[in-house]
Length: 509
Ligand code: NAD
Image (spheres, rainbow, N blue to C red):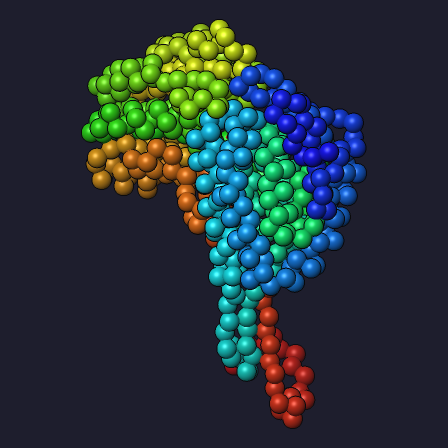
């Protein structure tokens, strides 16, 4: 049995435990689809509590050796892993496209952004350097070091089968932890493929594991005393649950949730540029990105008219189709349920008074193909009381909310419960400055449609887009996956050791 079988056969997937592909024992399986054809392409085992415990124990057993391995040696393995990711980009992109529906070009973009996190992990020797102070008092030297936590876990979503797991785990491995990834049960092929690359790179058995599963597996990861930290990425409702459960069990938790990302278009903005930026950021990956722009906010009626007219023309040119067709701008959504949910949002918003600017509910491809396709839909005159405004919509239904001033736009965005990403399109520096200063959102763009930070800057939303203090990417990842220890030491001459017991609190004289 291998982790991934041939193209046409339905694969039976495994876990990756203790350095080997391990068959699932639960007898429970989830269907993995090819969203471009609607066909089942795999059966993913859903782990029992006992299988998770076994995975944790193997990870724990690998930890003492791994933490003792010099950081230079650890990074050497990560170097080889990085080279393999580059070498295998085509195969990996094909796996991503097949199980998630995103186009090959988009999958390759995701891999290269994932590699950025691996690159950042290569800076571990620099990032793990401690602090040292000489003679803080009485010939005492004091130093602080960052030490690994032990077994840490990453629970990942479906929409970035490679980039998000790499962002969550690369620095954790580099810092000397044993890592258990619980991928989304919708995209398990990519995670197992990554496991093969880690193995080829020479990572010791047990340092990296993949346990496939659903809530049963996650609940064991949340409560097992050997698990020290939980990094979660997924929907807000689940992120909140993970955060509360993890904290209740005294774990370190960073839980990243959903987004409702606005794009303000100021009256002075170049409308052509703004529409071009909106199209890619709003509809790329069939709008299944936590940083996708979901709402266009033109300021002033004239801007709104110019923007929506141009948008309608350009949306009509977008092409939706299977992941491997290079002509396509985006592919299908992940499941039939997901498609039905997006359609429901559209229909409810129309009942509530939104106006259909472009109808993508039944794209041509649906006449011939069984995949979970939805064309691009644009709803105009959406108001903030509508469900389609309030909630994250993970599919290609985008909205236009018209406002009369920048202040109104900022207040509206600040009132939204989600605060992942936001952007403004303008040529006015004062407006941009006011916006970046006052906006209550974690990742902010100015004339940048998707302001995802690069791998060496912190990534994370505000409000209900993130629970907990950790970040993905950047220096905060190092803080999240290590604990700090401060040592005070004195090495006096034997005959200089004082004989006097001190009862007063030590001062630094
Ligand atoms: P999801 O919340 O359904 O699933 C995420 C993970 O949680 C999966 O591994 C799943 O198995 C597990 N899970 C699901 N329900 C659970 C439950 N009740 N108890 C315990 N575990 C559970 O998310 P998804 O649909 O896979 O991914 C899309 C969501 O992820 C969107 O909301 C998107 O915005 C968000 N996302 C956020 C970021 C970010 O950085 N903020 C990045 C990518 C995706």
